[in-house]
Length: 250
Length: 250
Image (tube, rainbow over all chains, first blue to last red; front, side, top):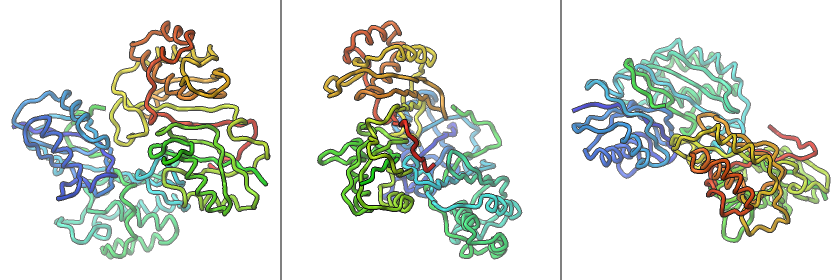
């Protein structure tokens, strides 16, 4: 048996998220189907993390085990023919048998894209928010995120995680291609966390919430005190890092 | 009666082109419906040109006449609420009563986008062509376009134009954001011309056609000698120029 990492990208618009579900389309199910058909062996991929319905991935790794041998380049070529247009495979790399796509990941980066003007080319790809935002204030508030580790206030309450501690190493708002983009890196994220953070920081940018109130929300550790979640379609899983090298086809 | 120019953008994927047709969706019909409803007067827009089914526009101007007065900023705001997500209005400008969106235009620029790698975020937005292209050779061939004026060899034969002369002032291939982009500017274009030029130049880039053969095609003035048309979904009307100033809201 050998273990491989597969690197993919997807537009999440047409999926009920990464994870396999009954009676709903998922990226994981598409990937299992494509790999099993092409490699002629039942393949079950394990992803680096879940993305919710409508959330996109510029880079997501998953691992799978296989007994037979196969040609990597030919398999990538066939996968990109077989997979739907909105899912692509960037690379496949042989890894150590114990390398786990989820547990071995040391850092994950998300991006959240906002378009202030209506843009026909960003339908389902960025959140259209036609209000002026104070980016300086949002960046000032963002720096407070780096001071905390318990993100209970930004997590769905009924999650099965044993801890709500996250180590955020980078978080910033910037202007990019006529959009406003939030980038955040952490060792791990809780369910719904990025969208809840973005929703809350957008309230600060619109002066509906003060930085003092944000600090109070943090201290409360209660999700119901934070702002509403920003919509799924602006969110991208942008990068997943591992402590070992993974060949990137691009 | 006053005349106005309206500036729009659209993703052409869901339309059978710009022009109104029976039993088929069109950008022109959507615009007429939105303007007539909001301005409470029957409005018929005249566009700067037609785009085929699936072709996009980053900038297209149309003119319309109206007897009543209206608030421009409020109308743009309402239009962007009323129009489908894949059509947006950028500006509305009062112009001279004789200014004609099609006949007054002095230059039009098109872009053609090609993605060499499968990209889930460019489905219907760029042509996926997974072959290596010799860009230098394509740019060399492109320079020959500037030497000719009769583009009969790159036009659909049954068009109602009185002349096939076009004055191409700029044409170039370049790498942009992991894509290969062809930009071409002329005073006017014949039907299907850009897609036929792109299809032919792509054959040169893949060494299926030589520059000498391209010159022979030009001299033949016969469409059937040129390459096949590149698909519609890679094509964008990018800019339309007029000899008078039009306020751009962006």
